[in-house]
Length: 128
Ligand SMILES: [Zn+2]
Image (cartoon, rainbow, N blue to C red; front, side, top):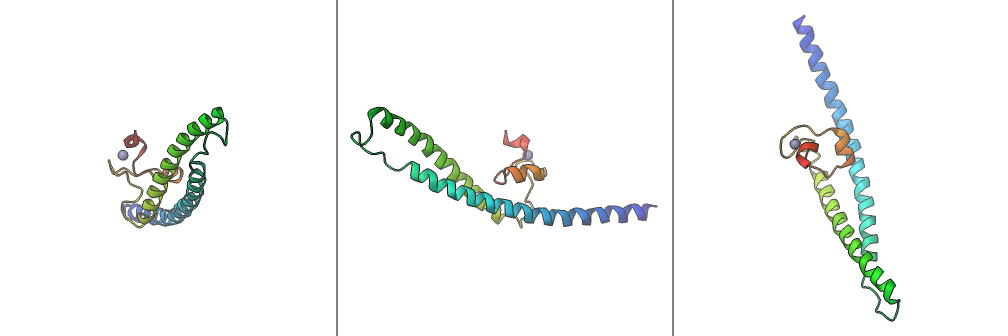
């Protein structure tokens, strides 16, 4: 009876391991996709944060708008650049046995969370 239980448990572990490998491939694809999207966004934000034309080219009000938008876009650009860096970092960590574990408490990060925020190295509780 006990032997049966043990083989059942080890069977389950094997299944989980196989699943994890498949899920890792999925996550890798997801991260690569996210990297592509983020690179495109960065290019767009760079385009939007180019120097603003002098007063005479556009009206005063539109110039104010342009300056406001520029700082919003600059902040978005910085966020995207940071995101890209974390995504590229996560990609190098996929083979790490600690991948998917919270960098703070060591708890396993749910795959759903990794899929949604692959750049996150903390579990939901520690990220707060
Ligand atoms: Zn944690």
